[in-house]
Length: 256
Image (cartoon, rainbow, N blue to C red; front, side, top):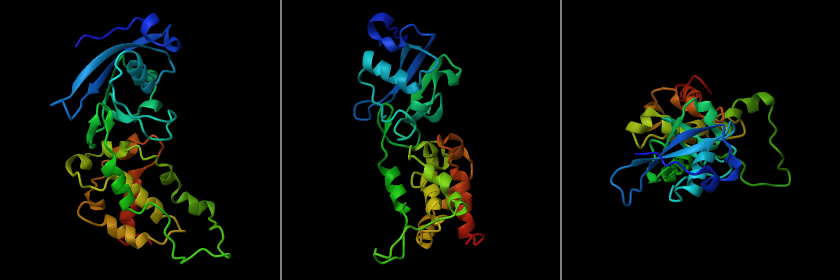
């Protein structure tokens, strides 16, 4: 398909006129309600050294093709909304600079292992349902809150046991990169398993036995083949693969 070259002075916002360079943005377009297969549309877009992939997508959406469906919100890698495949790798569009890709052609596609709603937006219904399944909250034996209830203090060492896993922003990139998710749609997935470990490792929590029962099934923790791709794509430095291995330690009796 021939690239669509906009007139910089007429069609693109003044904030990106006088570009240092330009890239070809290739966007996957697909509406499951009307299309039998996906297609790729190309746009020639000016960029500067600070331009992100999300900036380019939104510029095209605003000035060239308003029909593009893309999910985004905070634009600062905190909400996890703009996850997609960028040149074949799951990443956050707002966190990925064009200059870091070292390519004049940028291809954006919806994440793997998720149903496509339209174009770059995918359905998170099952993702959040599975996350909820592992009971991602502190479970206490306390029957009620009284006047004697006080803050549950932790030492720095106790916090360190689960801290990195609390940084999860539920972007879905780890599930998108997971090869087991591609072959087993019922697999609980690295995101939910990492969050199960986050609470199992928290000494304030009393729900360890229940969570371990939830993940110890045919589509649970034992389906993980430890490819490690989930940890490679996390934008917040969470290591789901390590969390899964530590959870196995509890199930095998190596950890208490």
